[in-house]
Amino acid sequence: MELLTVRCMRKTLHALPLPLAAAAHSATLRFRARDARRAAVNAGVSDEDLGRAVDRILTVLEAGPLQHRVLEQRLMSQGIPVPVGRIAIKTAWENGQIVYGNATTAWNREARTFALPATTFPGFVLDLDRGRALTTLIEAYFDRYGPATIRDATWWSGLSAADILTALSSCGREVVRVGTPWSDADALMFADRLEDFRTADPVTTGVNLLAHEDTALKAYHQTRTRYLGDLPQRRAFNQIGEALPTVMVDGRIAGTWQWDPARRAVVVSLARGRTTASQRRQVKNAADALTSTLRQGWVATRTSAIDADGRQLLLTGTSE
Image (cartoon, rainbow, N blue to C red; front, side, top):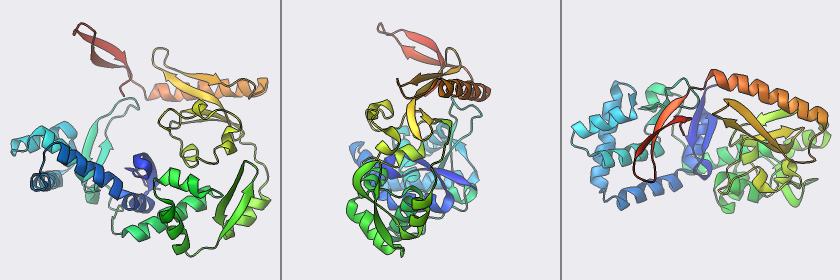
């Protein structure tokens, strides 16, 4: 399956199959297009200059992908200042006119390139109107993550409750309300999934180290207790609502993990009273295995910073 990472729901990044990526992009475009337009206005870039710069970008990229600084230089050579070029690149990217690629082979480095979607992802076709895109996106959400509440869906998507309800009524599948053991709120799911939900046996999933912004953790808000239990939300989410890299034991969050660049190792922090001695050994083994995997794709980088006296310092570590 070919996946494309798009900035869509709540203006965050999601890796999705191409048809669903196109629907997610189109359904949520108006928020990002508004932000791009505001950035242009704040920078004093006229619609005419912005449109001309975007057209130049599309023409330049017909020859193939370009590293972002090379693209800026090409635009500058054609009379487009770097600040205008950067706003145009962002606008074209948000509109789906160009795609971004990371050409690096190291997971802690970035080599940003831009290309035309027609040559890089020909299956990424933005031909859905917003209504159809909304229906496709919300049907996919409840099909994958139901039972969930309307508030869960609005959190995940960044869309209004009216958009969610309209999409559900348009998808052609019967929707039912169900009670769940993890929340007092009524949840919704498709009727054709109800029997599977009722008859599903409890599954022991063992130990899993989930990545930053794991898709399952991002899917819920009102009913996060399904995997949090009575654990405080800040144990799994940061102050702006991003999902932290977590340790999941049999479907419940038991702690968090992070990469320590100095030791080149995964470091785990478990909440008290959430795991048995046997499970903690499993967590350690999982952390050791992930450490081995991440070391293979990690490279030390040298970045510069300025100290309090204005002197340039060289730092070794991961690039963000």
